[in-house]
Amino acid sequence: MTDATMRSLRFHAHGEPADVLSLDQVSVPTPGPGHVAVRVHACGLNPADWALCRGLPSRELPCGVGLDVSGTVVALGEGVVGVAVGDAVFGPAEFRAYPTAGAADVAILYHWNALPTGLSHTDASALPMAVETAARYLTWSGAKAGQTLLVNGAGAMVGYALVQMALLQGIRVIATAGNTFADRLRALGATVVAHGVGMKERVRAVGSTPPDVVVDVAPVNLQPGTVGVLPELVEIAGGDASRVITAADFEGAAKAGVRTGAENVQADGGFRLRWDVLGHYAELAAVGRFHIPVARTFALEDWREALEISLAGKARGKLVLLPGSR
Image 1 (cartoon, rainbow, N blue to C red):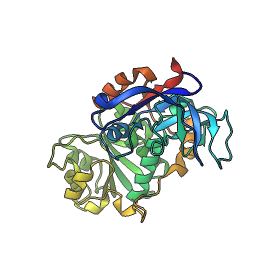
Image 2: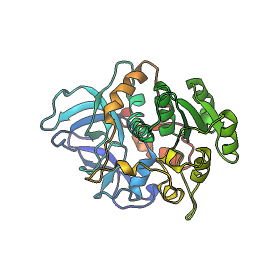
Image 3: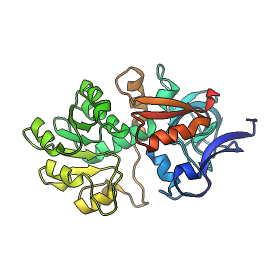
Image 4: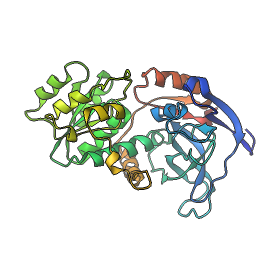
């Protein structure tokens, strides 16, 4: 890499990630107003990256992937204050206004927090999307201290974050999960039941009354025309669909009558993202009171191996690219 070019994982057409992604040599981006450029030390991967490749949401092409970044500031955009070149920061990559994102040697951030002492770049890169999404859906769910919350899909990273947040707020948690994270979730303080056939009976066996709120964050891979697990979650909630909110299955939500958070969309078509809590949970992570498990790390050039593991549903934690590892 020269001073003027860098590597960037991106796509030039929509389609299956393995078909459309390529590691390109591109110009190093210059941060616009309110943005910073960082030398990427670690980039966390998310299912949202593959959704971008498939066209959701549609962005101008070419478009980069990699939405979670931790690194060192190398340039400041106009109007940026409170941070300097050389500072260690982490946050979400800006992929909308630039043809690159976080899976690159240099990324542009539109929100950032200082990297807390004691937190590695790798662990910090696992936080942004999981923390923001979990915090937003926990708020939207309306669950309060003293209530019981069922988190369906607690073995996924958003669900794992949401369980921890709820417990820290004094909410009792029932978590559905597989064997990979069951013991860790119990150690955190959640009551864990297995997902799959018979889940409704297992949930009822651990509580005398239905949970007050149900949040569904389980990854879905549904056949057309099905509604997945949402009708069962409504039954678990005592038949009250308004007590169920899903962050994952919007098609099924329309059929089952459960919430998606759409009621929080503002006049401009967006909603408030919860980057305001990112620094707080990073500080907790730095002292061992919150974490997102990192399953494996990969050199940037080994992105295909990471992709295959992710698409096969075998990540078992966060997968992280390390662009500076070569």
